[in-house]
Image (cartoon, rainbow, N blue to C red; front, side):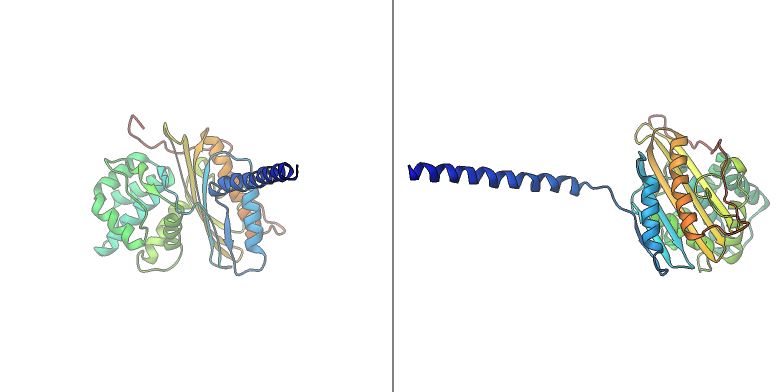
Length: 307
């Protein structure tokens, strides 16, 4: 009798042990595929935690795949999310095209021609695709890759076959580019940096959406956006922005894909931007915040027919 009872107890113990093991195994699976978290660091007490909380909240419930980069020189603040994930650039690559043109002109100790200036202005302020294609062809792959190397944009891969909008870019490299555009360096001359910022500050109102959303009127705004729809990963919607004033000097990159519509991606980017601007530059008396157009537009870049 005792032997039978011991046998039952042993069997029961084995079942209990197995049952205890199951939750542990199950719990390990989601952790491995966990959604990447926003990470922030800052020299200003409490700012990193606030930004992490508010950017995370801005993305809560949003579908799509979002990559974020923030850098503020004044408070030595950095935030990143999916910073190494590659995205089709769409029209955001136009800043790289202009930077390459100016970098190459500097190497040859020459000014831009009047034609180049006209093409550059149309490319940035109106996101003109034809102007971009002309400059892309004029520069050629060797010069474009030469600039990317000089800029340390090691993970950016230029689109082939003239499809510059399919250039592969990530947040880290775009933030490197924006840092070159906004501070003295050996890659771009001061005049070149001023010229890029001037054009990004003159973007037509219908294209001034995305990262400028919620920017206080006390800071200057420079922006370049892009979007592209393809059969896989839906809509790509991106925004690059640099902001200076009110004691701050910061840049934001938000790259997104898997959006159901273009407007859905725009809203996601603007939710993130509003959170960042609010945390970095709290509103003071007489300061208003920028509200982008309710009808955002952007040049629809060319992609292969099957894409």
